[in-house]
Image (cartoon, rainbow, N blue to C red; front, top):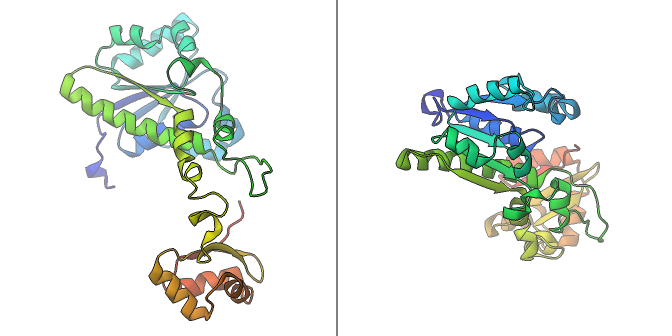
Length: 283
């Protein structure tokens, strides 16, 4: 997106959301042209200590300030930021925001045009229940291997999906304000985002043996001479081309063919023949 076309230019965002979902959402808003001020507590943001390079990526183009919102000085500084902001992004539990004087009703009374996007765990009354990406993936069956053994997730599905929903909710809230002239409260629940991400599994699409879970020989992972390739010849014309070029029409024949070259060689071959196939990368 060119700088001339950024849709959120002249939009001011204040975010007190730490960890992963809030910073990822704030980074998306920054990318859309918003001016983002990231407010951190004196202890900083956990992600800055856990993954400093990731933190640096997520805060590019933002102003990061440290405020102790439990003090009068911090509260006054926060009010100054909110007084000129269009959007307020939070990831605290409602009771914690209320104790800081930042509950929606209080904030809306002081700043009626300010929109809030509140990233919470569970929706509605469940927003007070503690949880994290791991627990939201767990209850949706997203952390099991094919043999039923639980494993730690390789990515933060609930956090990242929730962040994208938060950015969408922010844009929608700002658009609605242009019509009504008044700010609105918008809740984004990570548990709901995780449930949506699990829909393909829940409906059998990616379950073991499902259409995208191993049932199709053309949509599978194969061992090569030195690693693995992900073959995604899902459409009939891709599958027909793959089988024709490899002279293989079933899973065993495809497996035998792929075992003859390295993963990198197969990836180059696939590009030459316009086929959706890539070598597996190690994290």
